[in-house]
Image (cartoon, rainbow, N blue to C red; front, top):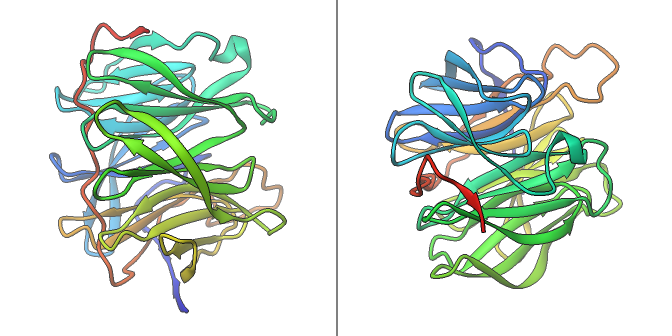
Length: 301
């Protein structure tokens, strides 16, 4: 099994709760979020390093940012979806019924599917079991509930042919593979691919490389692990802080793995917590999908 060590990005201010790195190919920029500060962060990748170039307020909390074909980014913010313009203006588009601070929940991780729908998951602020859901924004702007009874809806990504979608539920300590209907955006039967029940850590954000393998950030373990499509452990990236929250391939050649981390729940000072880390794992990623629906007029179905 391959073991690698990630190194910290030198020119990025640590986040409180860093999450959701994604490579915006159109802008040749790295995006990530600081959930607790409600910030969308933008950076340039140079060699093995990341340099932060901008920070935009997206809401009270921001769980993820996805590049939008119509310009700017679609965010999972507070209890719904928000558009962030290229100039940094955030416009709330829709509050998802039953979600948000009044309901004790917030948007967490999310991503676009191969045809441009956006999926965003939720969780309770206190991680109440079963309080999380997964929501879908269709290409016509309608918002639908896809899954209920999740605990911490987290990393989500599709296989290259779009026939399978992986979804992490950190509360259940599992990553499941669901059959996926690209034509309708409907989830089908599922199986557990990664089960960390009883281990020191839970699956958080994830990505899929060009070879079809899963890279999973393991919260609490200070690791990103590479798994085959049937769950065999292939590689481990060691990170010198425990709360590894997500990962993404970045750079013009998509050959740099960027890892986000968090200070959440840490009581002792940790100079690495909240920083971005990078490593070259010897494989490349796939271009991140872009949201292709409207950036105005979103509505519950």
